[in-house]
Amino acid sequence: MEKQLIDKITLYVKENIGKFHQSRIEKLNGLKLETVLKKKNPYLFKAKNIQTAAEIVKNITDAFLSSAEELMFGDWLEGLAIYVNHLVYGGKKSAADGIDLEFDKDNVRYIVSIKSVPNWGNSGQIKKLREDFVKAKRILRTGKSNLNVIAVNGCCYGIDNNPYKGDYFKYCGQDFWYFISGEQNLYIDIIEPLSANAKEANDEFQKLYSQLLNLFTQKFITEYCLKDGSIDWKKLVIFNSGRKC
Image (tube, rainbow, N blue to C red; front, side):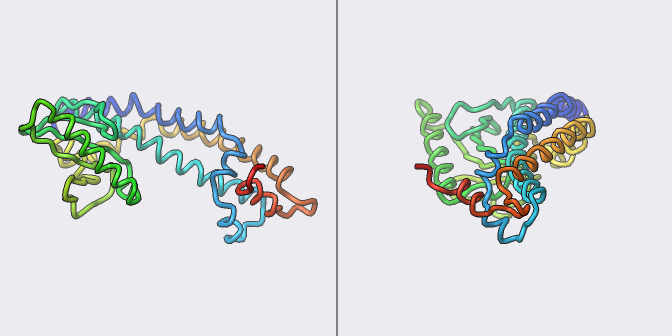
């Protein structure tokens, strides 16, 4: 990769990765026990024979945070991808519904929907993606009927060995980063700068996380444990799934 380009990308990552870490901390600061209890399946934890308040609190909190972090980091990677593409091809954030990036290359207008994971959607969501691509193509060709528009679903990691999906292409991992940058090894080159200030950010996160678990456990024992210390599963399930009159 051209050194000037990788230097710009490295600087961008180092200057902006802190936004992801800050988002994680803000998520912790605003989190409530009731939120995680509502979002996660109590039947699963019963089936796993979880018997202590501390264990169930940690399990549900970790599961909730993992899902949230996947979404937050996916948004961050989308921003990185758009930045990289802008440097190389002059791409820009798209204004079209469901489309994240537009750029021109070799007389082709590419419209790209960026996802963080390769297996990101069910059949209904894939149908919506196709509809968004069709609508975006129609709008772009208004007044430019001969414009060659190709739709792409880009995934920030993973592999798809069958990228042609009939009406759009799906590029994952190395193929995606190569597609938006023209550089075969970009998917490797972006790894190292991601660690910038990671230790300091994670130390702060772990401190807040530990405090949160202690507070959640204390509250869970008060509200969802019986006098003998066992978990009141009936009360927990009613809170999670009972109809509110």
